[in-house]
Image (cartoon, rainbow, N blue to C red; front, side, top):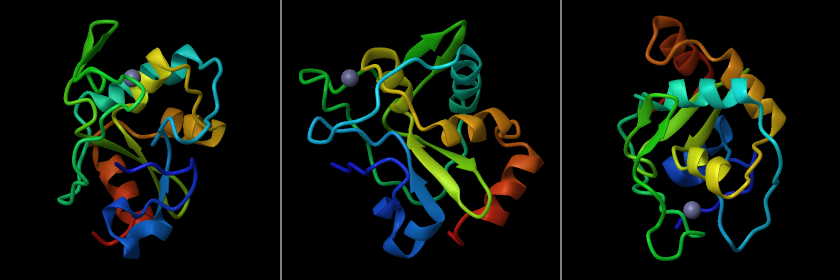
Length: 148
Ligand SMILES: [Zn+2]
């Protein structure tokens, strides 16, 4: 299963795209990761973006939680009345300057259950991210991301 170091090029969507996609939250018990507090504003915004995340045509498949040894983690998380479905099956693309962050939707579960603290620059990009599927969002994806 895919496991990438935070902020490393993410080859899971084709090696030719790796330079334009930086991995965040692709955790595995085989590699240490940053634990700590996360801001409530960030979590709220992250959940908003994960409710119906835009997906490119290519998908690397389900990203099961390797820390939850029996179940592979939940497939749904409800947070403050909002439901995030298909945990581990969808990915979140967050535009940045000249590249995209790509996180598995499991990132929400890692924050919730495994104390994961994503890199601060990713948290800022999530807070600055235009509304999911808005014209501004899709334009930012096209401008900064790879040619799919
Ligand atoms: Zn888990």
